[in-house]
Length: 181
Image 1 (tube, one colour):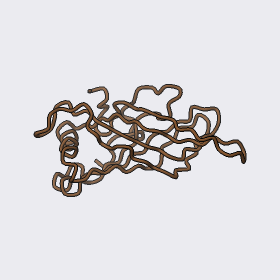
Image 2 (image 1 turned 30 degrees about the vertical axis):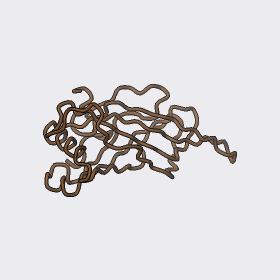
Image 3 (image 1 turned 120 degrees about the vertical axis):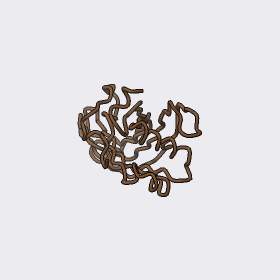
């Protein structure tokens, strides 16, 4: 499937975010054509585009200038010769710089696209992802990272703030896998 759920799909929901949380629900994911084709999967690796639903909980506009994302997933049943693992790295400190992404007070919208790619050299991670996608029809990840914000009044120099975020057990593929874990 080209789009396997996400913010636009509306078929699953994430737990309500705390008031000071800049992540506002399930990410929108677009999987590439290689996901369910085993030969292409192993030859080309797999990639997916992710757009995070960002929310400004503040009473004034903010400009997001940088986004850093890390993600791990739990492989409870293991895959092939790999034993179960509670924190398989999917992406580590992927940085999107120069965003200049403005959010008005209490506004929610999708972030710019972040492309995550796994390549054939990452055999263990690819094996585990293939198992989750094909055999279990799900992939759920713990997302974490930092959003760098600029707060500005008029022409004054901006106040720069780094706001950490976390979004545990987010369904990246399949149904609401956060509930199944």
